[in-house]
Image (cartoon, rainbow, N blue to C red; front, side):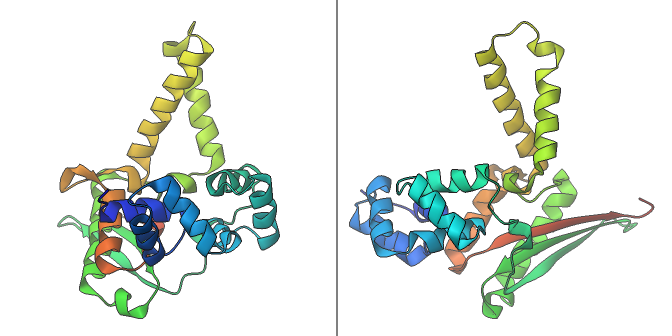
Length: 235
């Protein structure tokens, strides 16, 4: 079974393993994701990968891994449910740059986006710099408030759920229908508010997550978003 760069990125996101190991795993498993995950678990430190992905303390990663009986994704959920994970936006980064875009002739709106990578070599790469600038233009165009869904404050999510469930549209609906509609509207909220979930302003067939994944595959190094700043004169 053939696999593509996006499959490597998908497996990397699922396991937090390096790109080389993900490629090796997919090659060995003939593109079968479940076999590839088991391959990675045998050849890498699961606890370290949990730590790298979630920012949780090593002891909490070990506890989650034991409770999940070796299921990596379940372990990640256990860490999230217990609030053990660190804030990805506060994670110490080695290198990166700022995407800066000043909008309009009057220049009254400035967007700044933090973009991180692993090495100074990539930070100086023109493709990386152009990507950072494109992301800033995306924020100016579509008004993202958060970098990605995982960084939306829990209080904001709960408020959104409350507003949806108390709306006239859901009065008299069954619990199953309410949950289904709530899930759909939350997805819409993420697509409007989170940079990674938005459609790319230059090509609506792609999302910003697709753009980031393509950049990682082309550049060959981890790239991640940081904070978003929106500064408007007088506000």
